[in-house]
Amino acid sequence: MTTLHHLELPLTEAQARSLRVGDQVRLYGEVVLCAGMTTHERLAALLDRGQAMPTNLHGGALLHLGSYSQENDGRFEVLYLNPTTSTRFNAFMPRLIRELGLRITGGKGGLDAASVQAMREAGCVYLSFLGGGCTLLSEAIREVVDVHWNDLVHHYRLVKLKVEGLGPATVGIDAHGNSLYGDLAETARSRLPDILAKMAERRTSAGQE
Image (cartoon, rainbow, N blue to C red; front, side, top):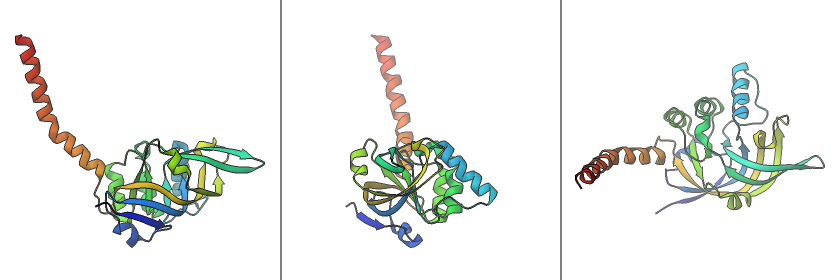
C-alpha cells in the first residue's frame, strides 16, 4: 500500500532517509525553483569561488520545476509550475547535492548513478512530479519569497516559493539508493533478448512465406 507523506520543509536528514521509493508526498513550506542550465552553471560557479548562495539552499528542496511568470508593478508572480527534465543537469547535481546538503530534489526523468550515490551520502531524495500536471502543482503556490538573477529570462531565475500541498509527487529515488528509474531500466534490459529473438523469428517466418 502506498504511503502518503505531508512533509513540512525543511526536512532533517532522518526524515529524508525515512522515505522509501514509491512513497507519495506533498510539500509544505519553502522550495527553490531551478529549471535552467545557466542557473545550474551559476550555482556551480559560486561553489568554485567559495561564495555564498543568493538564497539559503542548505538542507533545502531544489526542484527542476519550470514556471510561467510575470512582473506587475515590480511584483514577481509565478502563475503556474510544470516539471522539467532533470537528466539535463546530471553534470551538476552530484556536487550540488553534496555541497549544499540538499534533502530534496526533483522534476521528471530521474537522475544518473552519480547523483544517486551523492543522494545516498547526503541523505537526499528525488521526487518525480507529474509531467503535464501544471494545474495540480500550481494550486500549491502561496507566495514568492524571493527572486534572484533577474538578468535571466523569468523561466531560468532562481525563485524561492512558499507552497502548500505541492504534489502529489512520487519518491522516484530514495536516500538508500533505490530507484524506480533503475528498476525500469533493468526490467527493459532483461526483456530485450527475448524481444530480439521474437523479432528474428518473425523475420525468418516472413522470409519463408
